[in-house]
Image (cartoon, rainbow, N blue to C red; front, side, top):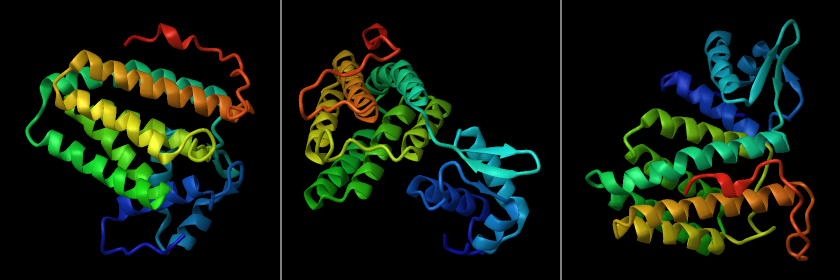
Length: 238
């Protein structure tokens, strides 16, 4: 981790730095760290580090253990199932509402995120692609008019990243993911709210099936059936 420039927004900088270190694996899943050690590595005092860790604990990324320190948590398969269940319940109706709301400048913002994804896919730059993917979804959720929902869903994505999960080049390509987002955008742009929501649902279901099957050890490329999941995905609204 790099040292924090204290002249900038300290709290956000520390949060972003710790979150990034967890997602990248620099802070090892399952390992214990002390607030003092993390503060020393960042070159800041312990108080803002503790505040950032409290935020990360609320996101399910770390756990405070009395008299021991802070443990970096590893997301379980059950956690992943719950994340996608919640995203289906929230993002599908949010897409419908955003498409009907259509706030000023929103379509241009979405198109910009999609262009960033397209450029990154051409360069096979997964990190930049997924950052733009995240902004694309966040923009849709925020346009539903519920910023708490948008922030909550964004925090859920961290739980997937903590596990180090990615379907890229394992069960699909960046181009495949881009196509799904292009379809969602085209339906939103056309004002087809029901179809856009259904397309978002299909995208989330596809991602969930691939990721959970992949993490459970299913050989998706070999055509083997997905393992049984504890959730009946067909029951989620669309």
